Amino acid sequence: MIEMTVPLTPVRHQRYVYIEFSPTVGCLGSIVNVITDFCRNVVDDSSIKFAFQLAAYELTENLVKYSTGDKTSIRIAVESTAQGPELVLTTENAASPERLLDVSARLTAAETAENPLNHFDQLVQESIQTPGESRLGLGRLRAEGDLLVSHSVIDQCIRIQVRRSIRQFEEGKTQ
Amino acid sequence: MKLPLEPAIREGHSIVPRFESYRLILKLAGTFDMTSAHTLQVYLEKVATLARESRLNEVVIDVVDVYYLGSSCIKSFVTLTVGLQNGTAGLLLRIVTNPRLDWQERAFSVLSRIAPQRVIVEQIP
Image 1 (cartoon, each protein chain N blue to C red):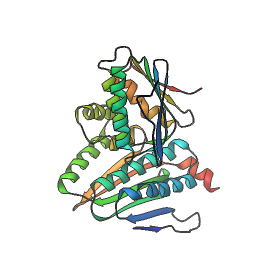
Image 2 (image 1 turned 180 degrees about the vertical axis):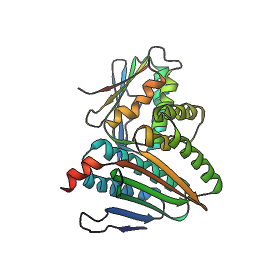
Image 3 (image 1 turned 90 degrees about the vertical axis):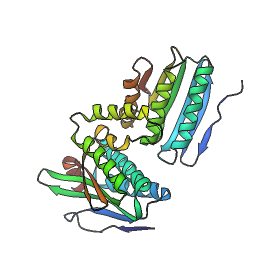
Image 4 (image 1 turned 45 degrees about the vertical axis):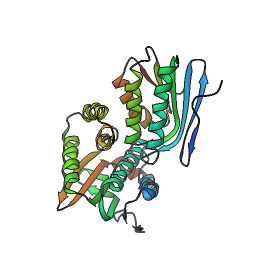
């Protein structure tokens, strides 16, 4: 089941879409479509739109594969920061303690890598040696999407956030 | 000559093969996310086997009409690239991308970093 909130607000209010859903493979395409439609309405730049499509796919696939419990969420928003408007995608889900440790370690490595492309190439080399899951998705967020990635773990839940400045494009779209 | 590979046409994505001389050309189209990963993995394993058993000069993968490629599918291409390095002396893997979808070159460039002598990533004119 998908519950969606789409606020119909004037431009000066924060624009966002928040979806709470039970993670199943069948909802993957619908979730990504909602996120990419939102992005199309606030940015013109194709590389930014692709970056958030990539993030929506990779993070939603992770929700579907690794969440425990029947409730996860994804939120896309334009946020005002000191540096100007940013497009921000956030996912939240519960997961097993083992999975949380693993994903947290991989996110920290991706977030702190000095060179995201070198880090991704290292993940690819590791994946060649490892049959089964690719474990490349989180590395792509910075290497291919130029996204700023952060995460936090509270109790048994993980919150992953990716963001990118949209200052110039957002102004163009809203004028 | 009967093609040793059949087209794989599913909801949301397709893989259609054709042979030209000693080249195998795969035309991919659609979205390749986690739901298509298994199909692609199995298909590319067949391609690697065929490339080793036949005397192919080149495998061309046309992704001009691919609109998304998930990480599981990237891994399948990585596995193909590594697999083609063994037992296929001189075989080239050519990836043909769409200049209007600039993410494609970025996503597939990892293959040429793995095997720079064997992989060419190029845009259609």
